[in-house]
Image (cartoon, rainbow, N blue to C red):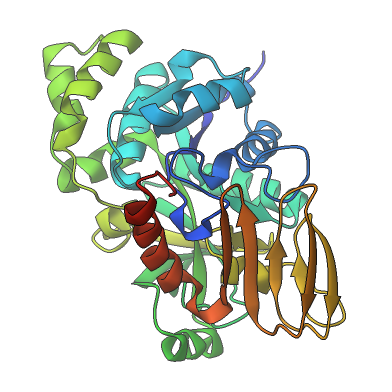
Length: 362
């Protein structure tokens, strides 16, 4: 007899990706872009990776209604009933709560991993091993499990998890969680050896997760069950289109990591990076002899050091005497700025450019 597979995956693909402007725009954000020239978008690579770990029929996708067509085009093997399209942008807590509700009605013994669609995984085999170990842990324990990676630099753009008492091999109770500390604190965290990066990969069995969310989120889905516990996928979809706005704009980090007493962290070694900011991408990608990172672009560099460059196909960049800059061009926008200033400047100039031109640049 074939054993029943209770492992499920949720791919989170609803973010706007504004910090990688101008390549990532609100109407075509980074998860739908083949950013590194591999032939597959970030969303497709995430699906490919997870389909090697869980049954592809157990993979669900969360997105926004604005991106529903992009998801269906890029993931034609995922049927519409496994895509949850939110009517407005919210953070990860409501997204995971909705997926947990749908999956638990399919399989009351399910264990789920929520996976962002915009990450770099360097060791696929180690990742598969860690994910399966994590799913086995949450199947046997009522705990919310996050996957941690040892810091390789004092990165202020990531969340940090402090390990507490050991529970099992490589699994520890979470002692504290700090979201995006300044660089000085990030260095202290890294030097202490007690803190790991929060990868944004979360695991739980569906029953425990439902109990956790019932404590911290409005009873949107519980109300649906009271009305119609056997609601069809379409009935659930219609209900959520009307009631999803009742959810706060709350991340699962703030909703559970910072509040629950039943949170654990697994020490993982698969190698990880968040494709979130230009500076973050620069830190993890291979450099040439002058410490420049050139992403799928045709360039001639002379006396240039420490830059990150991303240009469109068919465009030749000739750059002289530049140091520690971002040079990124996409469609009607050319961005040139210091790496360390990128996040604040992108936020400022996205808004200014949008107002000046009357166009949707983000």
